[in-house]
Image (tube, rainbow, N blue to C red):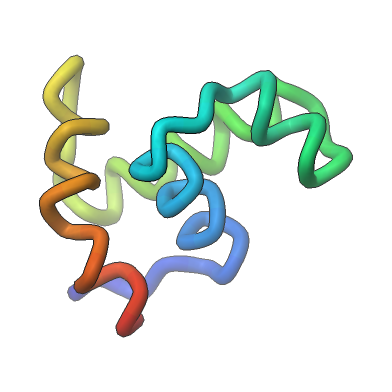
Length: 67
């Protein structure tokens, strides 16, 4: 699995748990645009694109947790 930063992994996991970017931003005390950047970078590292990316994350959640 490609190397994700700790923050990318954290945000991808929260997304896989059904959290929206605004919720994640509030919880982590960062800007919504920063959440978007981490998602974009994490998706790219995992080779994910488009609307199916979040659904794919749910399927790969266990793999993400194990780093």
